[in-house]
Image 1: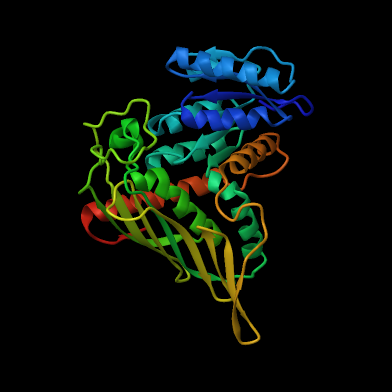
Image 2: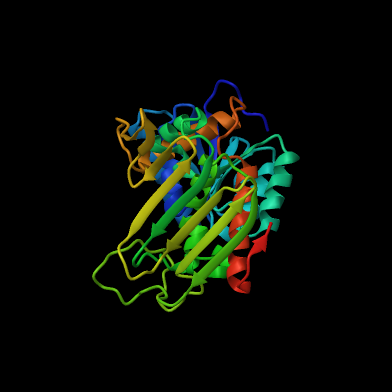
Length: 367
């Protein structure tokens, strides 16, 4: 299904949960897109999201038909006005929904992780190869303004070859529960949920090298810390404190062709301060993306620290989602390739799978 060249791109969103709201608001703010329909297995939730989108379009002064609501993605794909689709469902349906979207000739923005397993991810890649549509993976942190600035420096060679990277995302009591805490549905815990963002970012800045070997570890000693009353946290709509089958801590060392190494640690539950960090170490310079964008190098035999003057030196979620959606609209129209293609999503699934396998077997896994 080739999108029309002049009219706004007709958008369908499958899944009406919290992540869908970020997609919907960003589409609403893009004049080259119009939200046509929302689908959710809970029709009432789809109807609520559709009404919300219709009202928002009116507030923005964008004349449009009421957004339609469907109870399944197959019903949504039968709507001829839908030209591209955001897949915002649970992890266990990312692959099946995306494959159906691509089989219909449409492009798909698939939330991260692209899939739970390598086989599911490979099915998406194969479906894209046979489709007129394209895939973009929801690595929204790539689109944050601070990441975009750092990528400019990295691509210009200011860091030189990056030989070591360290990525950290540690929560004290941040298990969202519900399906996120059900390994059969989610594919895992903090590693596949939030860790994949930081793993992907570090790998992207390193130039997307091929992974050679992975040594991983996981722990489930603290559980979901549902007993904690002193901190508020975001909880899944189906939160149940008694249900939790995922790790609460994960870490890995990933070795790449050429000798580069990446170290990752991530948690839902931990006795310690929350931490977010991403650091890169290259032959010509280094950089910290998080907690605040900073570059390091040497000049005139002096070590220097460079602080870019930008609106936000840390992850900025609103412009990040807007940039991500804008990029998908351009990719779906065939105007430019996405910076987060399906091939990258597949590589991340392979690495994450290897980390879990290494942790389970207690040995290094060769890819």
